[in-house]
Length: 179
Length: 179
DNA sequence: CACCGAACTGACCGCTCGGTCAGATCCTGA
DNA sequence: TCAGGATCTGACCGAGCGGTCAGTTCGGTG
Image: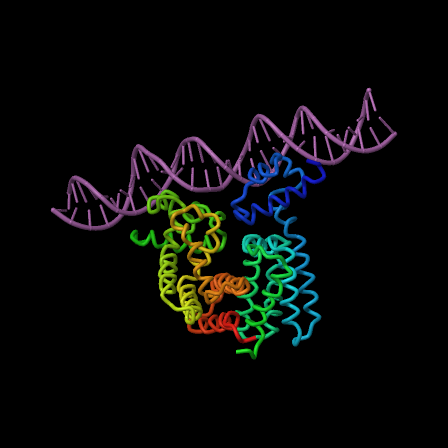
């Protein structure tokens, strides 16, 4: 294998195994065996095991930050649709990483990279709820966010087909005055 | 502590730690320390670590089996509402256990107690989708099921308040002819 | 061709893991 | 009061964990 590709291969394999078996359920040995290298190689490219996970989710985390920053500039009237569209685009682009972020956040709350994830998720909930203070709207928002993140990872359809389906279910569930 | 209560205390503490840190992220040492007993005590009451998890989720798993059996006897017209109501009641009763079942199912697929969980979940998806073959209806069903299971565990409100909110969001998202 | 930095490795480390077991303690019933 | 079953424990086990490091190999440059 071309050496410059080892780091990318480590991330690809780690992403797959972390998603399938969980972060704690995946060992350095597992990753090395699947990549076809040694544990020491993993730790040559990444400072430690946590660093693999952090590198893996960093693009998605950064996109999440960008999305929330964009939503801050949208008025109350349009924020819900902007949040729905933006989040679905994010999840379709980073299917596995978003699921991983949801999965490991409770256990990495002390990690600087994750400290803000709770704030970011709160901001998304606010966007999905149209900035409503009604706890029922917020519960609905959380259900859709968690559900979309959980389901996209297993859905084999591509984003051209999947996106409108997700947007439709989110809008039906969240846009008021329709029931 | 009264000795006959040790087993129940082990299950209560294990449930809390498994939910917060994941099954793999919780050790026998962690559980024993929180209960205030030894690892050997845990293994006196339960054959092995997996047995603690299985005992914990067994009531919820059995209720899931019962729900799916009841849904089999409901016609296509009424199955969606029956599935929504039945699942939400189940989740409100076993908040933590249902989330645990969702969390650990991928890693316990070989376990006899879990072999059927995938079938049961598929049956619930069918119920939530009103037995529709449309992949968009099935995606919507999966989003709501996963979202409800994930969110109920953190929602502090009691079931009198929470149940109608969840039923409403599920019906808006899933009942056709409303958009 | 030689040198040097990058990339990689096998052997090893200390620690934690799930689990065992001989023995101690507790509780109940006769 | 005593015997026996239930409950509990500390010390220990083998295995796997994350990680280190001296040494090897590879690739690029002068």
